Image 1 (tube, rainbow, N blue to C red):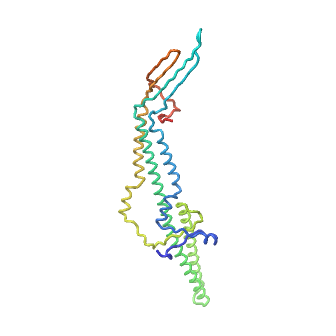
Image 2 (cartoon, one colour):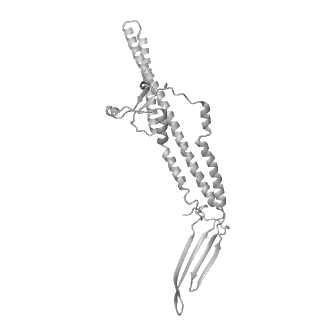
Image 3 (spheres, helix red, strand yellow):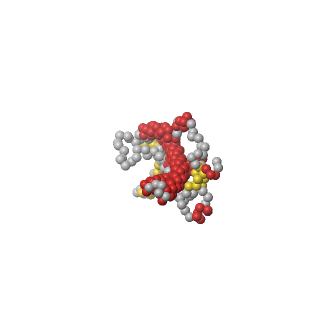
Length: 305
């Protein structure tokens, strides 16, 4: 592509900054590259992915709730002597509900949803950046045409003035030429404002500085549009479709988890004591699911600390 087919687009600045910083050349590939990493909504999506990954912590714990270790000791006062009593107890939950597997599956699918959301945000950012890029190319060509038309209008006003002064035409022809010139100037201001708006939005989409100068190709750069068949083929691979599929799996996994965590979790109890005889006890602690849970307690209290 020759140099004359590129137009430098920049918000007016000082002459020093114009010479100090060359214009950023933005072809289609460069816009896609910058938008992939500079979309304003991408940091939020990346943080959501890290949040989903953090949700995996503790999902593969052996026990749904923390085991408990109890150690007590104290003196025993008898009529003729004083001794020391000690007791140690261990309570270990035994989860046979399968909630751990369901919890782990749910966390994994939430990570997949976050990844799909990240890809969707990236793709949307690239699409918005390319839309602003094309809008900038269109408005810069329109501005060039409007400036050329303004030169023609000025020449028409000059000719009409000369002919009026020579008596060849009346004041009406000169007034009409002035109206056409004013309309042309108004169109130029409108298209220049549209060009500036597209430039500002493009900078925001791709992460450039507010005063960064850019150069974009003209519309006749030879870039052919992609065939409609290729575009339709990509629809099936759109990350939004993958995200919807993972959302369905998340909903099913959450429903399975809620059904499994409602089952009581028995706890194995082991106790040893010295008082002053030695004794060892073992048993099972089974919660009774007949009473409603406390309203301030979450239903899934299975994540181990």
